[in-house]
Length: 353
Image (cartoon, rainbow, N blue to C red; front, side, top):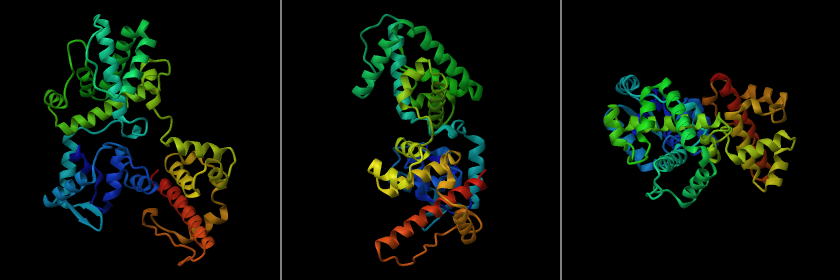
């Protein structure tokens, strides 16, 4: 799917590490902040297996083709690159479920759906002896338990839910529905390979990969919205209620209960810096869930507003102590940086709507 990376670039310099880490789902606060500023959060986790070398090779190829400039770990589009991006946007499938990238990891959902479909199809045709898809033993066991727990109604209900999923996807793009239906294994069929899908749909392999991601996220969304469905019971442990990771969610709940960041750090046996990172992540994804008045007093907001002006993305942190010597001075700088970053995230969110 590397051909799609051009969509993350503009004519303004962007940090290449941020783009790479976004695609790989490396969720540091710095990555999430800059990904939001760049408007590329929809690509979060699009290719978790991407290597640094693969990304660097893509940059080299783009630079040699005259499409980008690279300097000081940033990259931006040349006039030729801008034209190429505009052409690409018009001629290639565009993701439909990018805003739901946090809901689940497609590479965790797809194997279960495929194995479940294979099992139900074989069962419907009276076949008890077949070679299941090659999954981890824990996944095989999970699907087996799911199958036997729902066996009485599974054939008709599973077919019905897959039909609902296909119908919902078809409303967005008929090719998504076709990709879902023809990729499913079953009785005397193995489903499309990625190359077969590309040939049948008359698109590139990269487009198939993006469509597969959309299909999985679409199924995840459908599963999350139907608490009593078979999809939900099959996938529930891989679905997320919020964009926050599990540890951040725990920190946020404790903070909402009235505990200070220091108290949360002590109770969870985590460094204060880690707890601050959790709060900053929550501020990026769910600013409305944070009682900000407990983090930044009106006086502190006025002070920060007097120090930092213009676009938040252009700000540079001004430490209160230039060369901290004592542990107390270092702690003061750390607290000041946390307040600065929180204020920057809030103001950046206001500008981004």
